[in-house]
Length: 42
Image (cartoon, rainbow, N blue to C red; front, side):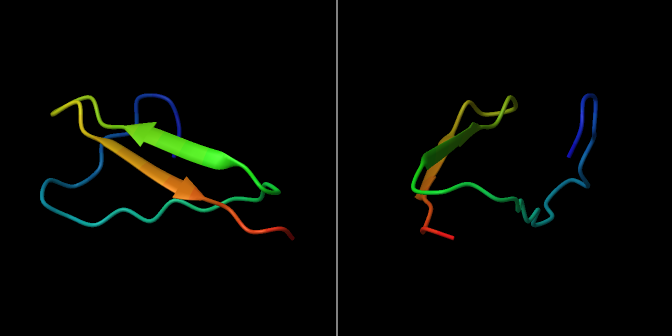
């Protein structure tokens, strides 16, 4: 993922990275829907 990235319409996008014990929130710009996940300790 990066600035100005355009994902394929109607496709699944997997986001990944590293963080310890945090809540990650992603809000989509096209429908303003918010997704949240709690991370595990590395």
